[in-house]
Image (cartoon, rainbow, N blue to C red; front, top):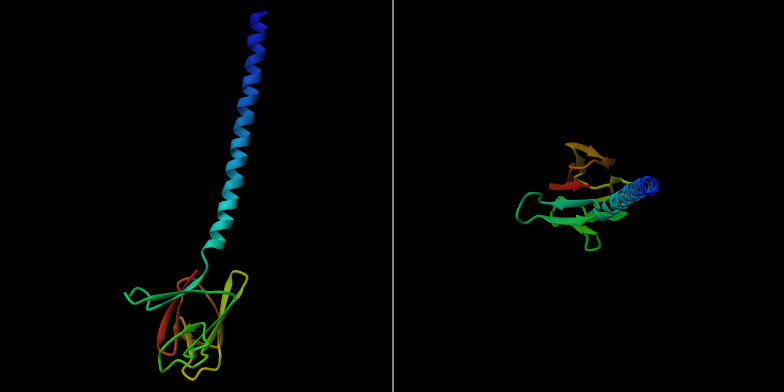
Length: 136
């Protein structure tokens, strides 16, 4: 009789062990998915003025950002080669697109003058004569 009880307890123990492992794995996977969603939302794209220099400035990008010399510009750049409203950056999903707003001295990405262009992580955006680094 004792052997029968021990045999039954062995199966009950194995059942609870597998149940514990299953619940543990499910919890870890749920936490991992949640953490990945939080990381995507917690790190917005940004532009860095004077990247790598002691006087660099970082600007977080929102859905629509105007760059220029104007006091109403979201990112103000104090340079005579920059127009008052020089360029606009808009977000479409996870992609940021820069639009030149008819500036005199142009907007450049990867050494090419652009009217409208999608930004890639690490791109150097030149507004007038001022370099800005795009980080996503």
